[in-house]
Image 1: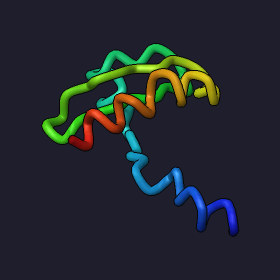
Image 2 (image 1 turned 60 degrees about the vertical axis):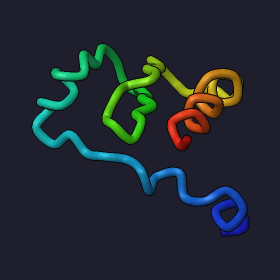
Image 3 (image 1 turned 90 degrees about the vertical axis):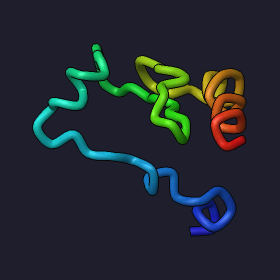
Image 4 (image 1 turned 180 degrees about the vertical axis):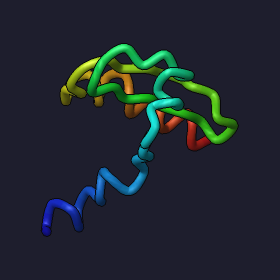
Length: 69
């Protein structure tokens, strides 16, 4: 609970692709995959595989900051 209070719930911004159609349209090639999408719906990044702390800090967080601007 303390971790969630400090960092927030990482699952609040997750969508479900029930019929798999969105995955096909995005060109998903593996699971798990992480996408950074800006406010206009543009895909800024795609990370295939487990999201490591290094990938999160080096690539994803800077893009999230950029997308929020």
